[in-house]
Length: 280
Ligand SMILES: Nc1nc2c(ncn2[C@@H]2O[C@H](COP(=O)(O)OP(=O)(O)OP(=O)(O)O)[C@@H](O)[C@H]2O)c(=O)[nH]1
Ligand SMILES: [Mg+2]
Image (cartoon, rainbow, N blue to C red; front, side, top):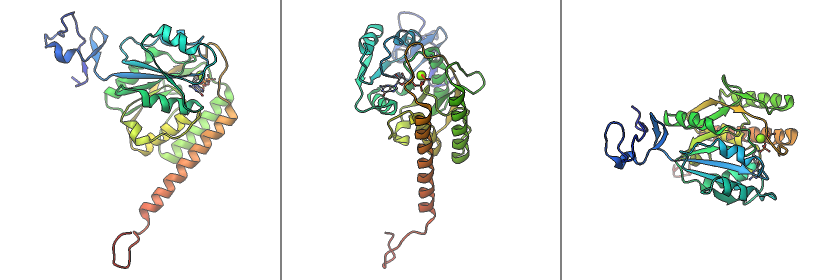
């Protein structure tokens, strides 16, 4: 049996169904009558004027998650009030700068869980899928990457132009970075917190998911794709602009590629030595 998946606590005394002592069992969050999970799971929700959609988002979040961190992008509707009403323990973090990337980076810093799940606030993501992401992580993956195009996934929310752009950019990333992704620009992903140290995120906009997907490959992390269904945004308009944001994604790909080349050149060039033969 895995060291992190254990039978759930079966009675009020806290002893599990093997009669073990409660001190250890108490750390596990019951998922079902036969399954519990040990690592605390934080859910980060970037939200900008999503008050009308939040009821649909929170409704699907599992009760066993450790915390919800909502990053508010200076909403002018009552996003924050609605979030507090729906999830009284929600941790609301005001955004420092602008853009979804900035919001996510801010949210990740505020998380206290070992596992972090990114969920959009427009009602397009089904929180019931979180258990699939978490299962992949506790089974050995570092990064569980949602995919609308892996077998079992789907989308109701992509225009043909966005689908084409995503496919082309995904092919470029696969070719240039040796990945085997079926999706590139998707906001539903999960990872162990330690990944953040290895990918050192530094971007502001919708290119954030692409940057993460490239850097996890460059860092040699173990990535597993999770089939996911993207539903239609329920209320309001998308903040994404296909051409503007597509170009930002392309720019990130090219920049990461040239960084990689520069690194390779540096590691292949003979070490410079001083006149006394010391490495400089
Ligand atoms: N805090 C914050 N959240 C943002 C910002 N921009 C977008 N978001 C949130 O990021 C999530 C994804 O944004 P969407 O506008 O739905 O973009 P998308 O999912 O790529 O596009 P659609 O599929 O058309 O909905 C939503 O929850 C937005 O509220 C921002 O600048 N700040
Ligand atoms: Mg959306």
